[in-house]
Length: 193
Image (cartoon, rainbow, N blue to C red; front, side, top):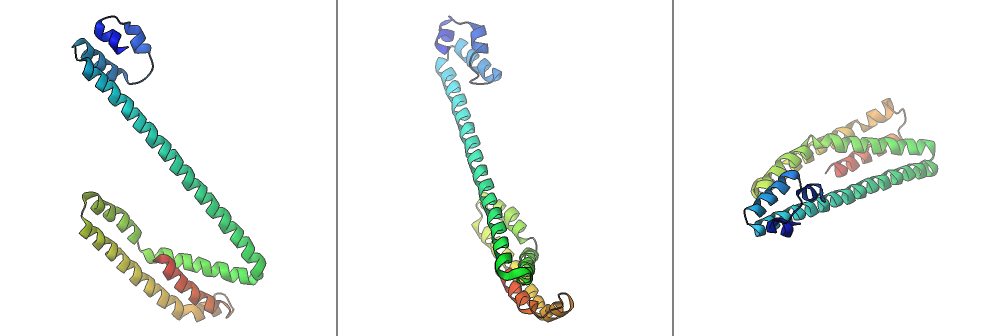
């Protein structure tokens, strides 16, 4: 198409209705470059358009592949958690499974509470410092977040270990939960870090 345009033997309607390689604005730039005699510039513009479209297609395929992988791994994780819950309920019985689920809930709660927003500090400030290449501040942000996280989790562990007998007697009305609550406090601290 461009060889015929540069030589003056072209059909403008065919060019505009032709394959959608580029936008109307880009076709206008290519035509004007051809009429000004810079055929090489017109070919370079067409190559740049094709390259950007290949790059966009590559990124779209990459995004689709990674999204599928993320959704698939999430699905496997949920199915595995469900299977583990059913297995634990069968093996431990109603009372044992109930105690296990309470302990796991406490551990998850402690892990979440112990963060105190430090995950967002790392995400926001850490990504900014990484983006500008300031590794010293990035390391400082990570250490600051870990210190806050560790202190908060340590305080929560001490509090739960101290009140475990009271919770066991008053809330659950059994002494079987006391040791499990203490273990859940330690597990929550490990999960939080």
